[in-house]
Image 1 (cartoon, rainbow, N blue to C red):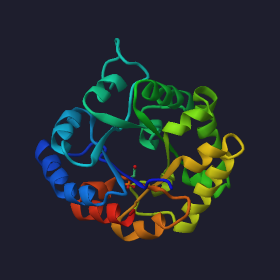
Image 2: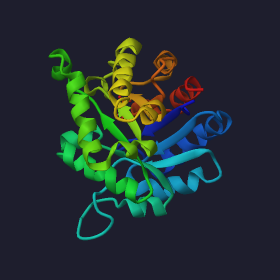
Image 3: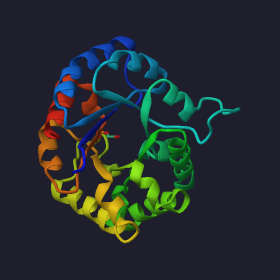
Image 4: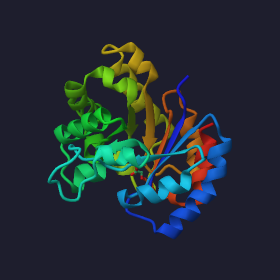
Length: 250
Ligand code: PGA
């Protein structure tokens, strides 16, 4: 009942040529796997280039990060309105790398979520715990605080039109994927935690898993009841890997 969603997060990688080749390579799989939504999130500077290349395909476009402002004196930022004008449908907000390197606090992430949604983008709220937090049994409380910060500002109903991506920080770019049981446990917990606040939202919201997803572990992860697809970094840059992940989601 929830449409599977596979998102590629290209981070700060790519050239015009490599991106053209990558899209060419994944286009057919995206077009034929009609029950899976496929999204790519390029570096902001390539958004228009990607928009031109995905034209006429089922691949959709997302931003990796978004400003809390639509315009103004904010050097270096990407406006949700501008991303939308170039065809973006989604924006990641609160990716752990932005939380870590750009000092995106829970409050900033909430403001980005609201600004993205108010300007017609579907926010993909990334949440996740550090290795220390997992080792000291703080995983659930950390995730709840990350979700609550957004719900307090945007309201639970905002998740009627948003996506959650659970990305344990210890699994991002490390090759150390969460087991399907570990991931499912967290996804089920998130849904159960949302349920008393709004049962329909809890039921409908897509919850993606991210962190070292590859073609060979995606099938088992995506087979879990509460895992609705993946947010994919490294493997999204490799045609055969990304195709394998799209196919694992169908
Ligand atoms: P990874 O990255 O797949 O390379 O671990 C995931 C992400 O950061 O979204």
